[in-house]
Amino acid sequence: MRPMFGILRTLLTGEVRAFARGLSLSLLVLVMGVGLLALSGWFITAAAAAGMVGLGTLFNVFVPSAMVRFLALGRTAARYGERITTHDATLRALSTLRVRLLRGVLRAPYRQLERLRASVFLNRVTSDVDALDGLALRLVLPGAAGLAVIGLAAIAVGVLVHPVIGAVIVLGHGIGPMLVFAWGQARAEAPSRRARAGMQALRSRVIDLIAAREELIAFGQLPVARAGVDRAARSLSQSQARIDRIERQTGFWLDVMGWAVVAAALGIGASLADRGDISAAQAAIAVFASLALAEAVAPVRRALSEIGRMRSAARRIASMLEARNRPAAVRMAPDAAPVLVAEALTAARDGAATPIFAPLAFSVAPGQTVALTGRSGCGKSTLLLIAAGQLAPLGGALRFGGAPVHEIDAELRKSLIAMVPQRHALVAGTLAENLRLAAPEATDADLWSALDATQLARTVRTRGGLDLRLGFRGAGLSGGEGRRLVLARALLTRPKLLLLDEPTEGLDAPTAKRVLQGLRAARPDAAILMAAHRPEEVAFADRSVTLDHAAVDR
Image 1 (cartoon, one colour):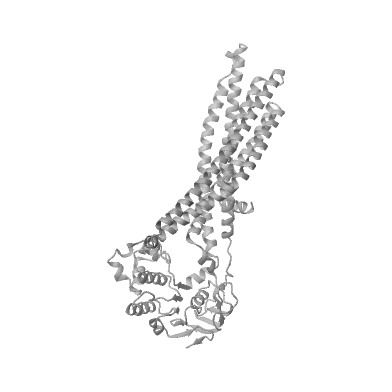
Image 2: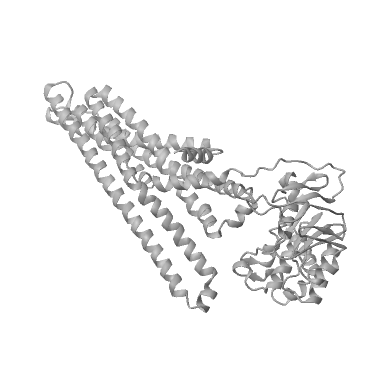
């Protein structure tokens, strides 16, 4: 339960006043509901009793009827205000939670982000967060308000009518429902988890089917993928049906318990009225108050049937909220030269302790281009990740401006260093939207300048320009065009250090040369470190560093 309480604190942070107003209005709704039914019962019974003894003309009907109208209208207005307040606060809190979740994920180690599937993360940000909307809205606030009103009603009935009936209300509407809820929650825990897993499986399979639809069609595997989606949908439907059954059973036993309390209040009240201990009107207050208190319990039914889903979602989200590699927030000296310097640098693969290349010693000054060469798998991409601050070195140091790169403040590092990895990321949207992911404030002129530098401007002008719409993962551009678009996006950050992993992959030799020249012309003072496989890339560099078990700088 600890993750749920932690998430609840997160949801309440910044929205304490709104949720406090919502709780107050929830209490007011329930108090007015109980008061309305109890007063109505007293009014009808007292008026009948007055008529039976010939005092009907003397009975004051105006004050009770005015109070009934006031309570009815007030309850409606309070309910409207409560719904508006709590739903608005919940939506804002969930929005804040999603932002915190994204920030927590982005602070995770790079290798962990590499292993994170898009469909899994989509489930975290959407369905897991959505599962928690009922935590405050349908569980905590209604539960707290319901318990408070049941306690107040029991005290009021105990004082105005008889303590025995007050005790019956506490047992029947307070303790009894807790036992029923505990029973229902225990039964719903496993189906809720299965429903959550089924939803994740369904979303993942649908996303995978859409992403790989062309390959599935080409290899004749589309029916198999569709069958997997159908199985996930059936599993989800079965789990949801089980949850619905448990909710109905819980509701049945709550109704039985509620009517038992009403029957007990009626029997005890009638017995006390026969003995003359209370009046018939007082007995009516107890009966109708007991009847009205069922409303205090009802809102929590669905939330308790979904508590298993909430708990598993809270555990997953809580584990992602906290940063796993908090940067030490080292600041560079204001007068430090933006020089990248490697000193006896070694690196290892994820989780390994064996260096993948011999200790390196090299530097990249502003305006210089250094190419990393070597066989495939020798550690060039790993070295670029260390230079980007995404990985820590195994030994030695890699400094930029005199500070270890992986210890530089994350925001400062982002403003100084740009990296274009082997696998570029483009999203569905316009060309301009993809470019402005790196520089939201960039003007159209800035965008065209970056496209000119990467030899892409002429290509896209005839296809819609900056409004050219791309599909999923940049569909609509060739591999080489997508590569150049990502390079243009990196230029928009105006980096002091530009890290490129095979920047001209997918380009013909003349275009590759022009793109490299355009990058240098756009950022003449930037230090460029690139993993090079092609002769054009090596020839463009001022010098190269060969990575192997005896690293060489030449």
